[in-house]
Length: 321
Image 1: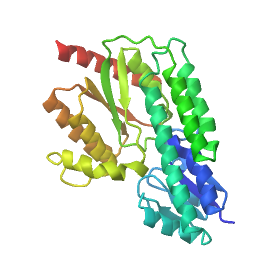
Image 2 (image 1 turned 90 degrees about the vertical axis):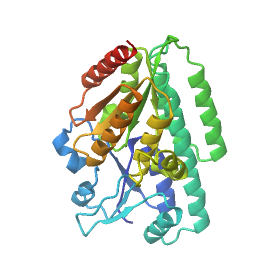
Image 3 (image 1 turned 120 degrees about the horizontal axis):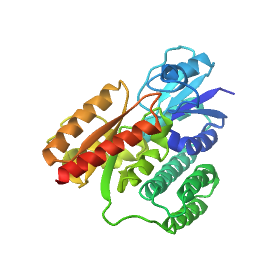
Image 4 (image 1 turned 30 degrees about the vertical axis):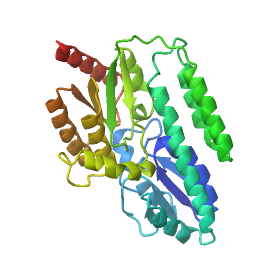
């Protein structure tokens, strides 16, 4: 039996692990883009997967499947495969690892994974717009933990949809104490940020303290291919080249939807993020929309997030005057 490592996003790690064990007929280990507690930024190249698979090399894995950005293997002993959401391309890769898999089985699991991730991210998005305003504090945090722990375990897709509507009903039933004049804030990123504060709801909670509502588009590469062409057409005057689906989506949201302010979440020393930031900043300046960036590194704290949100709140007040 091969030793398989899967490199994926923290939002989807449980679903990916469960289904790829079925597809590969092999036990797999999931390593996300968030470090274990206690590691500092200097450890990221070793313990977190940001364009490399050094962890797989150092821990004697035979195969590494990468769902994040394209990367290369630094060790000839590790067979690295980049999955890129192209159905046949990914099937050929899976076939190399598990030659016994049937095409029909792969189709079934591929669709199943897509639906489950889409629905799970939809629930996260619903929570992000309400968290911090609930009268009974901690209610939405409990629902989030329950989603992470239980929703992927349901094998039958119809029962899974039933669970989705049950969670949706629970979220909708939460009583809120939210002012009517809240500002709508667009929260954007290119994903792949190795920091726990990016993956929890501390940003949303900080915004709620200033009477602002977070509009964060939880995205996964699985689903961007359908909307990517439409978004690219809509932003053609800003972006003539294919800069990547996340970048194109972010430019589309900021250019075609109306918000009171924009927060861009950026990885430290990431060229792609810096290029995106400059484009978004240019659009915001033309539209007179307050724009601010949170640059994440290993030591980014809740205090830094709160300071940035306070600065954005002041920028919005000045902009109104």
